[in-house]
Amino acid sequence: MIVSLLLACTSWGQINFFKLFTNNGADFGHGVVQLEDSSYVITGSSSSFGATSQAFLLKIDSMGNYLWSNQYGGTEMEQGRRVLYKDDFGFFICGYTNSMGNGGFDYYLAKVDEDANLEWEKAIGGYGWEKVHDAAMTRDTGTIMVGETSSNPTDNLDMYIVRTDIAGDTLWTRTYGGSGDDYLSSIRQHNDSMYVVGGRKWIADSAMFKGYMAYIKDDGTLMWEDTMGINGSYWINDVEVEDTRFVGIGGTSGGGKDGIDFYFYPVDFGGGALGPLESPNPGDENFQHITTYGPADDFYIASTNIDQWSYEGGVDVRVSKFLTNMAWQNGFAIGHPDPDVPGDIIRTSDGGALVVGYTTGVISGGNEVFVAKIGPGNANFPNPQMDLIVDAIVSVEEVIEDVDMAIYPNPASTGISIETSLVDYTDVALRDASGKLVASEKMQLTTSMNVSQLSDGWYILEISGDGVKPVRRKVVVHH
Image (cartoon, rainbow, N blue to C red):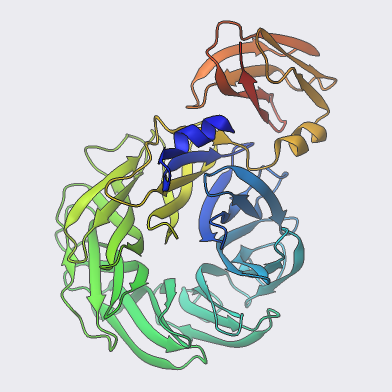
């Protein structure tokens, strides 16, 4: 992992990196938490572990190097939306499932120990569809999960809050909504027993939906709620807590606007508006996730953008640094010809930030989990093109053993040999650390690939075929 170390550090204490994790094409990053040792654990959904999409946990060290991963769920589909952690306790995965429960989808809550072993999993919901969008751990090591439910007479979406105890048993639920589609997208803890939530609410009088924020106790008491937005439709995608205010971010459209404009809505702790902002920039700019950094409650915001600087074919990710008054400072983009989407952003212990999400088609035409680490200081951003490192979301050893394949020698100086008894694998490709194809061969039961002309470094060897799970292994070329 020497290459990872060199690419990830601009100087000691100034860590930044950009990595993709994938095995066989349908890998999505949605949530992340940092541990006391500065490592990170990521959750999302992945089909790399088998035929169905599973919730997963992926642990990486402070430099972005793979440590372990594991899958969770049943025979259908699970998606991890958020991962919550407590030292000497382990992890909660909060998301949704259609492998178990009452309806098409239900809230999914799994308890995992610190070695990635599943202890229990539960489904919570009614006869309709329930999906978690965000979650927080409570002071008694329970959870509050927020999202949406269609288990109501109208079949429209309503806001849905579930509070559980440490064992995953439901303590209370709350449902808010009306005649249109309403949901909650975010929750943040304010103090030991208070939380701010954000989402959107349908307003029948205007035939539009408006941004929504509320303040609740962990016993379910609603302290205040408010809708926001004047001309057009509005929504809140994320909320953040500062010393003297709450901040909601999202987007707005309609009402004569040209596409989607970002929306920034600060309120005091009593819910009073403190001067919202929205931008009439050309194209679409939708604020998705926010975290503070530094001593002055400045922000990093991850957004999705479609504008004159974006790749054709889908949205790109922009990560921007703002002062507390929303003056833009600098930022970087994650862009490819197909959609790139952020899933979460957190403040890190070194004063920087870390963003997770997914890219599309960068490696093999499917989806890849991306992890972008921002270092502390000014503009200490990774370069998603130059710094790109590709790694497996499932351990290489597990994949190789699963398909009865041998790849040797590694490191290699002149050639690499691949041996297998499986005739369904028909193609071999070698890619550099940026994902660029540098060599390819047709697969035989024993295949050799010449690497004598390649530069020293590490590469991704991919063996694939119709209807089989691709195998990817890191190989080192050293002359």
